[in-house]
Length: 337
Image 1: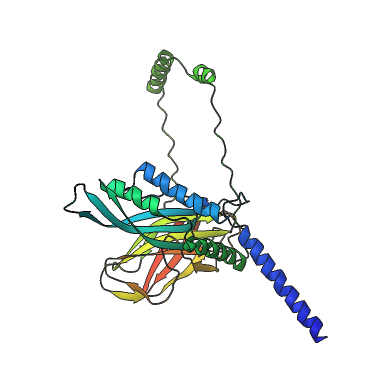
Image 2: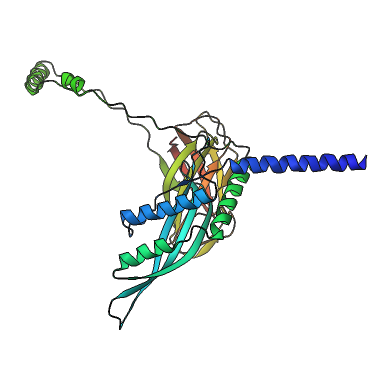
């Protein structure tokens, strides 16, 4: 009987491990384009190709049901030195090559890695940068671990929250317009002028008051103290995960302090309260709630995720945030889906 129990436990553990492995293998990646303005278009494309090779070597680029996860490269330059006393100028450049995995639909960041790089080149700094890009070794084991950990973290996140992986979103092709149809729809300029003149004459004979334009309510924010500044970055909903993310920054204007972050309340248009929420790691912002440092004049960002949102609300009538002893109240917050 004991042996049978051990066999059942071993079978269940193997089944769970198999399911977890299958979930991780379903996570694949696309290569993103660097955003640095210091790199030329050719250098950005070369970095993207490096990422594509890293993805291919790790069998992590197969076409799957999701295309949400992007590996975005970035090259940050460090010191640049020129060697004196030689017949030709030689530039010595050091820097950091970084990879970040994020969800292109909601901005969530799942993993990152930074590798120190350096190279030398004869001539300009741009040529030295080209040498740095060429020196990046896609066979480095650090990228194998990076891909493996990224897959694991993504799979664990969606499994823990009981969510399916984001579905691939097909872009709708643009419908080409028929030039002849456009010409037929166009009215001669003379006719337009005559029509305007007729309208003017009618307006002079029988003036009609214009109907007032209905304006949508604009969102507003109230802060309990002038010592705190607030900036809303975005408020986006995710259909797949049934969540709304509010990305915001706050600035302490008076003194250095530590503060706890939280959500006091969030209401749906029907009057129901969205009680399930969490801070998430995204855009480099941390998810810590307690004892956060807030140096004077330094912006501190957070991404608040409201969960179990069953409908695609166009706006939230009330969201109350807490930052230490301060209270931030947002009215009529618009939601982009």
